Structures are given as C-alpha cells and as structure tokens.
Length: 338
Image (cartoon, rainbow, N blue to C red; front, top):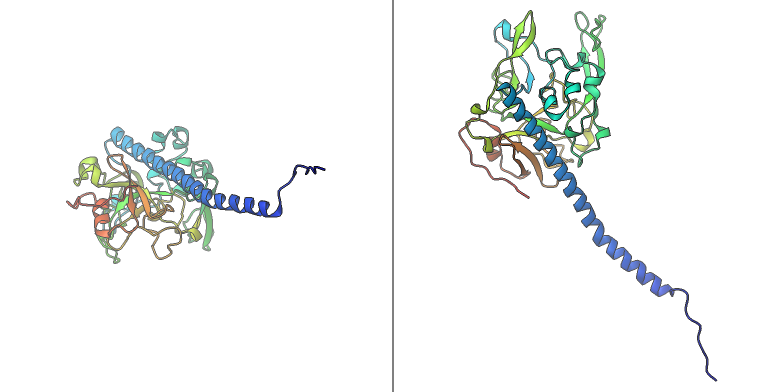
C-alpha cells in the first residue's frame, strides 16, 4: 500500500526565522547605502544653491561694477557724513533680482532699517538659501529680539516707543549660507580697527560705510571690485556654509534672520587663524562667526571664479585664512575635494 503525503502550504518555524534573519541582514546592508545616497543628493543640492548664489553675486558685479555690501555700518572716528546707518538690510537683498526674485526685491528699501520693511519682504521663503542637510524650507523663519530704549526709538511699524525698554521680536528668513567677510586681521581686541567695523573686512562681502545725507544712508563706500581680489578669483572665497549648532536652530544670535544688518553673523562669516571650520552640528565650541556645515567632514564654498569646493573640517587655519583674505598675496591652499 503506497502512502502519499499532502503538499505543504506553509513555512516551518525554522524556515520563517531564517527568512526574517536574511531580510534583516539585507535591510541592515541596504539602509546605510540609501542614507548615503540621500545625503549625496542633499549635498549636491546644497552645492547647486551655492553655485547659484555665487553666480547671482557675480552678475550683480557685472551689472553695477562692484560687489554688494555685506552690510552697512560706520567706523568709530569717521567723519559725520560716513557715520550713519547700521541696521540696513544685508547682501541677500541686493542679489534678489539675480535669483529671479524681482517682485520680492521691489518690497525692499535697502537704505531703511531691515526691521522697518514689510512682513512680506522679511518672511517670504526662498529655497535657494537653505541647505537640505540641515533643514527643510519650512524651518527657516527666525526671530530677532530687538531691545530698544524708549525716548526716540521706534517699533518695526515706525511707531514711537514709550519711555520704557521694550523687546520686539522681529521675524525674518534665515540662511544656511554666509558671505565671506575675511579673516580676523585687523584684530578683535576692541580697537577701532576691528574687523566688524565699516571698511575693515578683508573678504569680499564686507561691512561697508554709508554715504550719508541728512543723517541717513543713500549709498555706500568701501566698494569692492574683482580687481581688488589680487590673490585671484580661484583663490578667494565668496560665499560658504555657515555654522549653526543643532541646538541653536532659529535662535538668536547663532541663527538670526539673514537680513539683519545690525548683526554681522546673520549674513556673513570669517575664517582663518583663530576661526577654524566648525566640526559639525554638535560643535558647540565654535563661535557664530565660523563657517561650517552639517555634511560629514567638510563644508562647501563657492569661490570668486564661480566654482564650488569642499574644504575639510580639519583644514589648517593658515590655508583657510589665505582663501578668505582677498589680498594677502598668499595663494597656497589645500582643498578637500570629494
């Protein structure tokens, strides 16, 4: 008598456990590759943003014969006709027409305080200013607390303040990119020659002094041209990624609105001896003057020739300073290229 067994309709427990284990191993192998591919895509997106901002700034130069001011601020001891201003909007406003933001540019008066501008001007999102490795475009609305003494001060609406000190939170879009203000050489010891005063920056998008009329700016001095970058366009940084620690996103002073002309780190950064590239999102030791990114091991920059380069976070600060100083006659540098 022949006995026939019925066909099996299910896995045994051992077979099921083996299959689950194999799937787990494959997932463990594939997920890091997927994450690396996503980061590579975000990094490329970031590099393209920098390239577009660099080209926009160079187009501004081609149109007007000079680079836009990083911001406008006086220098102590200057004559009265150059001693006005200090709160006007920063270089991103000037390049808006060259990134297809003509309508938004019309909302701005570049010689009025940035916080007097309309909500539309300050809060309209521009995806080009955000690095996708750090945040989404919906996470770019920052606050700047403006503490103003009563008696002559004004609110963002232009209304006079009462006698007491009032803190007003002014909103504005933040940026993950900053103009190159230079290195620390005129110094940072509280002297009148400090780097943050008008005309002292050694970079390209620097603090410039105003040309004043009736106590208000209507133009700016300290205008820089390509010819002023005597180290060469391929050896001078124009714009780079700016350091913002993860815990300080959208918080002043590390992540102030990019139009804030009263706060240099809002739109500019410095580098060189004393200011290395930050080590990443959890580097809380670097100051808000430093360049830095959330890409692993490097930070991206666009140079004056329009090329985008990656610099290692371990890059020596002497070489870094040579790249941020437009005219120190030193052009030797080591790039970290992917």
